[in-house]
Length: 336
Image (cartoon, rainbow, N blue to C red):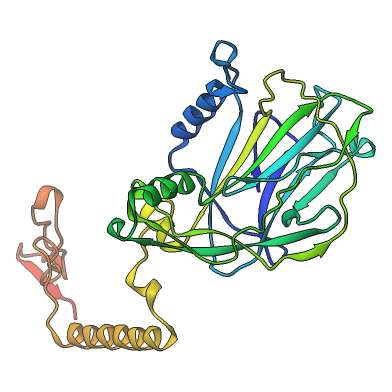
């Protein structure tokens, strides 16, 4: 799960099949910090806010995108989160396609609040609403010569937000006013994406969000009006998930290069294991047949003679008894 150390009590995860996907740390954390600061200085509502820039905590995680897998984004506010405003609100964005702002319910202010973003809502007529689920689709990059200059420019704009899921958290003030959420009147793209190679600008882009078949949904309830604590409507924090294929994660340096054994199927693994066993067996047999070569200085002592200090030979141990006879001669009694 992604958490922000500076703001305890908030977390976000991407889920596939009801389970959180594995997350990988950002290999370029300094760039994340710079981007967050830049976000605080961009123009908002046609006026610069750089003179009143603030630090916006942001956490970036990398995840593997499984082509064709349906996914959801789950946000949790825990009871230990300390409010500095009346309540918080969140907004999701899938490849720069934002949702409406979702407000923390009043009854959850002091308790746990879970919200799962599972799709994009559309208003296709004054009385008809639909929703589309989220799926990891594929991106195919095509040689630039196949597109006109205008198409390439459009692809460059589109590619900027691809491969990124975001959760924005805002601080909100209390209000009794409500409004009807506004929704897109268009159906979102339901097929894989094909863009110009030039549009990627060197980025590793393997997947993009593909939206499911529109399904009839209920008319949305009125939402509280958004009264931002920050006059510039800047977020309190941002969760960011960059998704790409496993091969893309390796190229990006998020995952290590796989070993040859990692690419083997079961049959290849059994063959490789058998070859290793035969090599080890043959090596053991060869070692048993070859005479053992001793290192210099490791020779075993000969004739019972031991090594003395600094390589000198120790005196021979006596293997006989001596006695002197009455006539002065020495008698030697040899031992067995």
